[in-house]
Amino acid sequence: MKDDAPHGMGQTAGRRRRAAPLQIVEAPQSPPPRLVKPARAKRRHRLALTSFILLVAAPITAVFVYLYGCAADQYASYSAFSVRKQDFNTAMSLFGGLTNLSSGASDIEVIHEFIQSQDLVKKLDAELDLRKRFSLRQKSDPVFGLIPDASTEELVRYWNRMVSPQLNSSNGILSLETHAFSPQDAQDINTAILRESSDLVEHLSQIAQEDAIRQARDELTLATARLKTARIALATFRKQERIIDPNADYQSQMGLMAQLQQSLAEVLIERDLLEGTPDKDPRKANADRKIAAIRNRIEAERKQVASDGDSERSKQLYSTVGIYEGLLVDQEFAEKTYTSALSAVDEAQAEAKRKSRYLAVHILPGIAQTPEYPRRVILGTMFSVLAFFTWVLLILVAYSLRDRR
Image 1 (cartoon, rainbow, N blue to C red):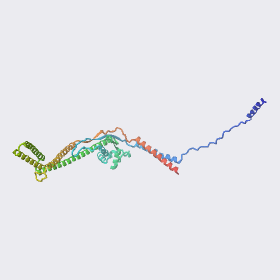
Image 2: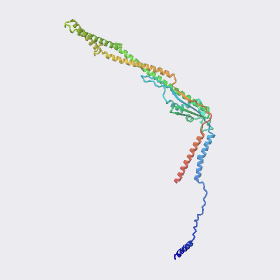
Image 3: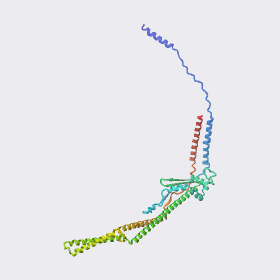
């Protein structure tokens, strides 16, 4: 029994394994492929391509064709200069007069504005015939050339395109670049600008010198009038007081009083020496009379020096001396002022003979060998970038409006 059970179980398991059916899994069938239609250009695509050709490709091509086929070559001439000045301290110590004959660092700024001014353009047009020089290539190059019958305002605007002054405020140097259709014209224009600028600097210097001389002469006139007034006042005082130098009279008066004081001291000593003698001694009476007389004289002299009386001899001598010293100080001040003003006039006239302000040219105008303008690559590239981004912006705006519908 024990041997049959396992055998029977093995047979049963074998039958089960043989009885298991074989399952075949079929793969799912994919749907039949659909045919994709070929891509076709829509209307918006054609409009975008057309706009690109009209707004980008065609203008860029036209610009490069014009720059390399029609635009005339331009030559440049360079120079650099600054305004130098000489400082002269012609000081008037009392009147605070001339300290500097030049205006300061703003001179180069004046020249910078003058180069771009209409006055300079008119002068150089009359001298160099700028309209003719700038319109040499106008027929073949109407964009960069000047029309022959241009007005003054149009000529000034074109001038500022062809002439480029660059001011360096840190060191006061002005760099000048002039363009023209020939190297000689560019150099001639640059040289003429330097000459006119130098003339303007000299003119400004001359005006400053004339102002300095006129100011010094005006101050000399005032100083002369003040000196005359002080001398007349002193002479009138002497005439009224009938005295030349009150200080001398005052000193003599003080000397007389000092002598009287010394005499009084001597008599008092003599009187003290007679104390042991009898009272009826005539020497005592004589000494007493001397003492009284000297004291009376001292008192009279004191009244003459300082008294409130109205007589000529009783005037206050110290008050007279005070008035005289005040007039004397006014005269001395007027004399010093006159001397300083006269010296300032001489110095101003001496400096007017010298050139206190001048144009210092650091780089002379040169003549070009090869044309530098117009910058064809830079201009073409800038126009291309601008045209492309303009077209992109228009396309984005158009698609945005389309999506809102």
